[in-house]
Image (cartoon, rainbow, N blue to C red; front, side):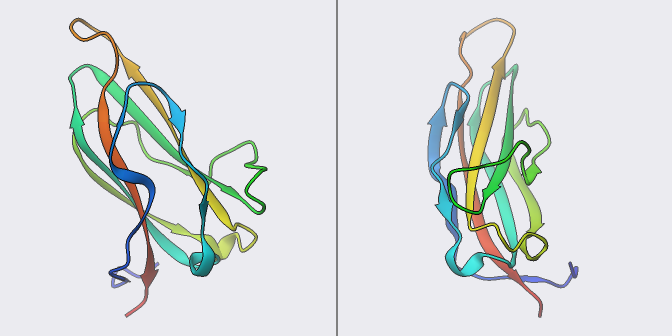
Length: 130
């Protein structure tokens, strides 16, 4: 993908903005529609977190919205802090994929509040060449 690729302004969400989680989970299935078979930008935004915990987010693909396979299309590196992480995913390599789903695993250790706490979102938008 070109370093000069530009972002479209239309942003959709695999995990809605301001989502708060304390346990591992799975997001709703997202129908790609016109994004199917195109390069997309996936953005993980972590807005709030407490110390001594981690978040692992993966993106899964499906042709029918039911069978998600044995492995994710993409997994973000394990996160421990607030911030934004961008990833390009070229769906032209997998034209059969019509649906995406986000899954996350949370972990907490140490003292203090016993449950993990994250406020995050996962965005998707099309990447286009200039």
